[in-house]
Image 1 (cartoon, rainbow, N blue to C red):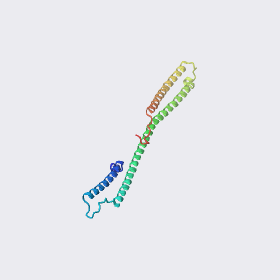
Image 2 (cartoon, helix red, strand yellow):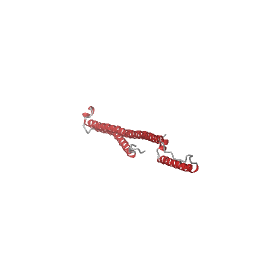
Image 3 (cartoon, rainbow, N blue to C red):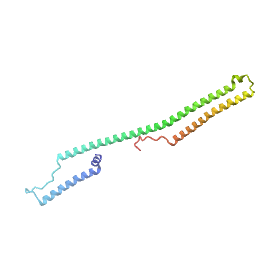
Image 4 (tube, rainbow, N blue to C red):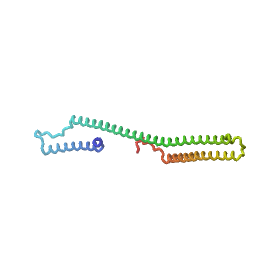
Length: 200
């Protein structure tokens, strides 16, 4: 249907149509001239080219008008379909970009939350360590601070604190590396521009 309308409503068809009318009129005049020379009328009048009938002119105008309306309607339909496809592509690209950015942001937010929790635990562990060094257990509180048992207790408490805080620091370092990886991933895969301008 589209190719048929495109063929009818094309410059080559219009030129061919006009040339066809001109050739038909030339043929009609040539035929009348030949008839006048070789087969004259019995009453002596000359053969004449009949003018184009009003019905044919009216029909031609009606066909041209109808063809114009159909072509314009078809073009409007095609433009509407193209706009709908372009809008759908644009929306799909926007949704894809939003989802991709949201995934990275969510992962980074989760890591940041875990990192804050580990920092809070580190502070709590530090407070607990200091408290254990200041407030000795009842069986050691009566002893002198230079007593070997009190000093061993301080060493044990400090070792336990550093073991505990070491695990937190290790996990925090892993989180920092993971966040760096996410930042690099975002930099290497920038959000694509939505195809909202008709380009692919």
